Image 1 (cartoon, rainbow, N blue to C red):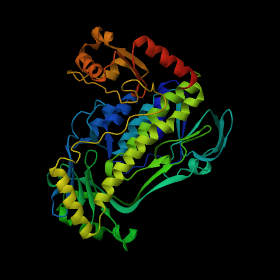
Image 2 (cartoon, rainbow, N blue to C red; image 1 turned 90 degrees about the horizontal axis):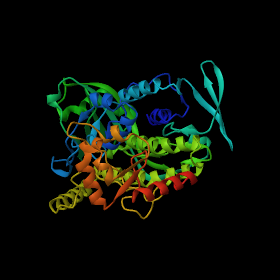
Image 3 (cartoon, one colour; image 1 turned 180 degrees about the horizontal axis):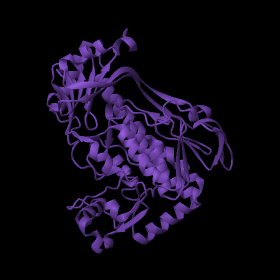
Image 4 (cartoon, rainbow, N blue to C red; image 1 turned 120 degrees about the vertical axis):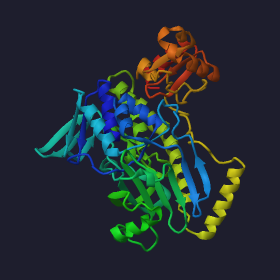
Length: 468
């Protein structure tokens, strides 16, 4: 999904794109389960948000329970509208999301997606990349300005580029069981983490018609053993769902936390799982890849269309990596809370968390992640690097549908424009809170800077020309 999203965003900006897809078709079984409000906004730009929302499901909260069913941590507000203008948490069916993205890509005349094209070798040249690709019709050579390795955790592009991983020391094997749902009345309506040292378990909603359980694999258990139908039936017994669900998929995964040391090497860039891997406990794996695509799309387009220097691409990793590491840290924290298998450690954990919850020291809403602190921003101005919200009007219209996807200068004076009427109060509140006369918003919805409109326009133009 990262690569196809990036291809759509680039093609919509007038960039010619080829997607080389090794597989014959979309992987048909569920994988990613969640997309947040910011990533729904990215899918909005890609033209597929409404289609994705039609088959996704909302959930009000995310509960961490101990073996007795006591609440250790409750994250609420997941069904509210987030700063991205969409519900905070959206439980999805990944193959449906990918199919919608491919349909969007197919409408763009300057984009091609070729199935059963496997990248074999490439040369990272000074002026371009030469890629040798195995296709059903024989070997094909493709020359391009840039090669983006959005080719997964085992990324051949990353390996061939000699880029190492920084291992963040989290590695746990889990059994994932996806099911079709015949009777929703017998399933939980919230996402659950069961912090039971006997068998840590996850239970979450998925896209329409589906549900998922994940079970931690104990030492000594094998993948073959836990994947046996009888073993899975026993694991599901406490949930009392026999006859209410049918198993669609069972798979053993090792949840890892790793970040590539370099995300750019000359004309090669990494995105998605090729650049970083996060445990699933914060639901940010696919989201991180979509954010990579949004960050890269406008920068690659500006460079390829010779509006700016290619050193703009050097801001990609410094901007994205702190956010990625923060989401991974959050996922590891949640994972270690869940993956405690010592009963005594679990008792101590429960006591600490219950006390912290009583004292109001635990988060009660989805976490916020750090703003951009360096890169293509006007450092020293209020709100620079922060996420600029997409306001929703009373009639349901969205701000991005008015201001578009290019860089955008909005000033207090613009609030008098009749077209801004539906968003006037919300924008005025943002200006007041940020103590700003005007804001320059980047194409990926992050704030370049604030200040006077003339000075802001000049600053953006000068920075953009030199590659920031």
